[in-house]
Length: 159
Image 1 (cartoon, one colour):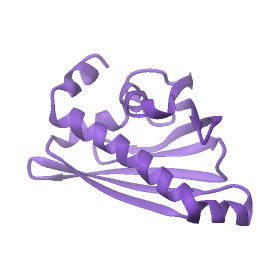
Image 2 (cartoon, one colour):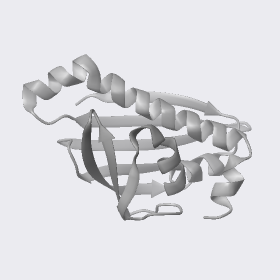
Image 3 (tube, one colour):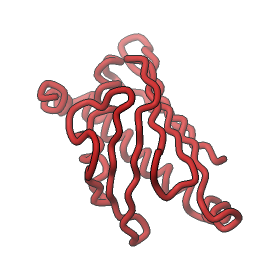
Image 4 (cartoon, helix red, strand yellow):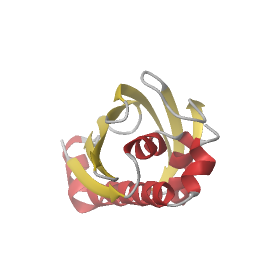
């Protein structure tokens, strides 16, 4: 099972970073490149434990849907979203937040298994893992910029 590990240092309080990472508005805004939108489940605000959300987006020229559920949450330190329906054989994204003085370390542990057996493993090695890592880095950059600037106020104060 491939694993993507990311660390993003954010000059903002842990609670702000945690809430931005589970904001439906932030997710959609950070995924504009793929035209991702919410088509089911929690559509706005802050997703909570046991809630689901279904996203529709175009990746590699193919429109896909993925339904995830928040399977674990301990605010403001960790939440886990797990795929319950989608193209992957399995997918789990653990979001970890660590207060570091005035800053927050946001860590991602993103586990997935591609479908199609050996062909999926070849796709992982050739392009899929890099593509997923790029998407996660884009999202983390958006969260960082939002948390360190003024954008968080418009999102979190209206949630």
